[in-house]
Image 1 (cartoon, rainbow, N blue to C red):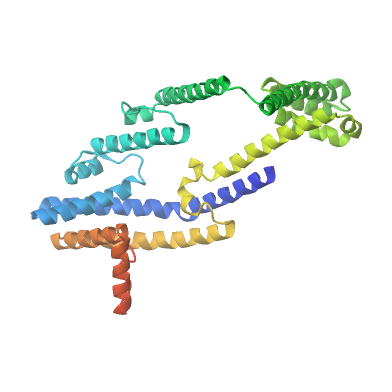
Image 2 (cartoon, rainbow, N blue to C red):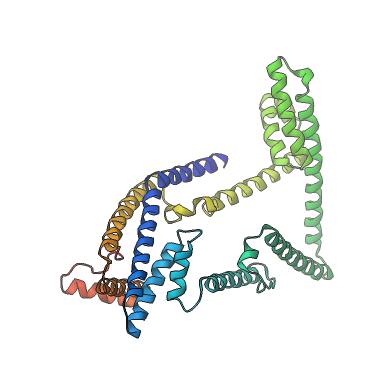
Length: 364
């Protein structure tokens, strides 16, 4: 399992490194071109007059473009925020607050669905979400609610008379826990004896044993039996007589701990793909290394083409007519992409008339 995790981490790191090398710069360049385009769009918007329908068309296209930009920018400048405020019925601050409240509402629902607890995050703000102290306070409340629910369910179960089989299982679990603790102590003493400086054959051996002993002591203090077991395994390989002297109870306890460790490693393996570090490659996170590398190469070409197309749009964005044409095309593509029935109808129409697919890419 350790090898699987190491292999998975290596795959993800290789994909991330390749993405950063081949794609990241082009992605940033595209964002800068999009910013130039939006600023030119807004400048033309303020220069000429438009009717109500034209204003709505420009507003929708501008806000869509800004949302694309904001998804790549952590801290938009004042000019971009001013453009947003000019084209949106809500201010940038109001929009951010609404998004925060939507996210908090989703968190409340998730807490209810997953743990059956009722949390109220309605009073929290975006600043609270970015505050480590507030987040720690929120986590403490969630933990308290979950623990309270567990205790409540436990007390309900206690009121019911347990069957003989249930009592036997509880006793067996208690015995296993005692055996684990007993094993923890016995392994520690055995390793401490094995790693004693007096057993060192050289200065290098002594220094190595001192470092290992620090690791053993830390594992014992934190009751980290899996770590002690890993250290002991090295000893067992060299001391066959010790292995033969292990009792059935000790072997059972070791086996249980190793099973638990395997489950923990499985969870770690599963959660690696969801780590924020790999968010930039989320679209290819499940691809094999070979397939992922090919996807990144294709992604590079797509970004380079998008940069070139966006640069063309920037250069031609000089007139009122160019602004309206750009906004109408962009809004039509956004509408079709959000409505699969319209998308299918457009595709079939293009097929019947033997035309090229008219909505291949966004107009940049």
